Image 1: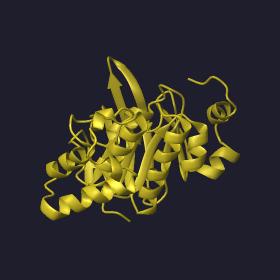
Image 2: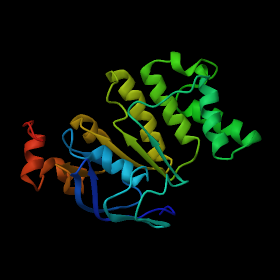
Image 3: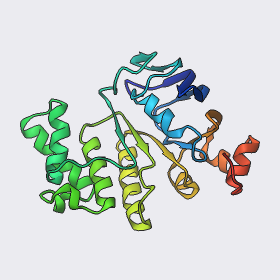
Length: 241
């Protein structure tokens, strides 16, 4: 168990422009299994991830981490990290991008250099340390974003569609990094609309539709015998929204 887990989400709702986009979402996240938020576009996957990370304030409900209860947005938890679908690269080298995150976290001196170099090596970017981040390929930039986050030694890593714009080879490289994070003990919580990726990466599925959590189940059980009509339609390739 990490200091943050389990996390209990109770009656979570989110409103925007007079519309309720997340509706009475309740579930528990445990340490260990890779949790994948699955569902059609507009189901609320990214919204839920941002609420979990403290970037948005819920209209109702609460998020109760083991070491922190959030009734509203309080900013990211210091032991959590998030990588977005299109991460922002600073106008500096790959190594300096990782250094910047560590400096903000108060990591100095030899430890900062060690963490930076280890993160670049673990993501296959050691040979690109001095290259400007913004001239790297899209897949390399995504791995750099993962390195920047992993260097902070997060207990929980939130990943929002981390391979949505990548080709198969780059997707494989990013998935290998995510699997290495999981193997090292980081809790993975990620969104995807890619069924193949969900089958490869998930230990449990949280399936959302129209702002509601429809199912939470072990991945094998979800893919072999989904309990809801909405999930069965989604898995069969029907147009679900």
